[in-house]
Image (cartoon, rainbow, N blue to C red; front, side, top):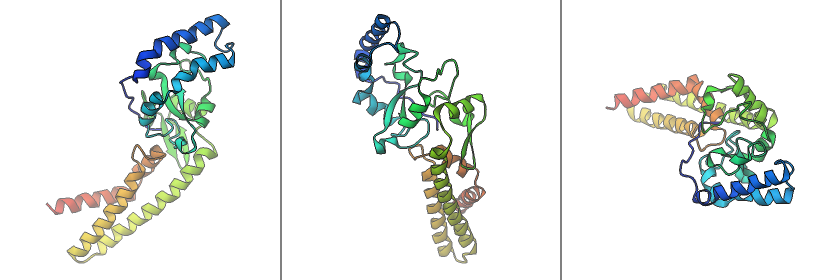
Length: 249
């Protein structure tokens, strides 16, 4: 999970219809006595509007089509959904509120279900910086505090669905790290300036590949960024590149 930037401009479809859609849903709540007692076909018809393509296109772009919670690419399997941060079952007046929407995979959305985020807060990556609440330990996501732990619990950010991709990335990262280490050694052993120049370019290429893993639009970029930030070899390589650049001025 990484810090996200919400697009402040509300989609025009919501500007034009939010009040009408909300009033209709609240009228159904009043008519049937509660949200849960609204007949499913009636409820589905009233709620379908928040899945409008205009809403999804703008919302999903804020995460590069990743799940806001686990950072998977659910769009690949057609399972990216509009998630209500404050559950619509408990807060139906927010069912069509732009600032209550997040992109989510079906697994995170299903795990979170109707958890009351107001009484038991979890991380909202649009409003909170996940780095203040979460950290990586080997291939496990861990909470730094109560809010971080609650987020992991509520969204199901543990177990094989998280460990397996993290483990795959860790192997990939260790391979890249080994390549960087070799590139550093080759540079230090180079005797001529043309040879050093070739070696420094190979080192830069290896660093660029690693940096691609931590870009916000990359899958599981929080995990990758944490791994790279802790890497002594990566830090050594960046320092060497800076020294080389300074020597060329």
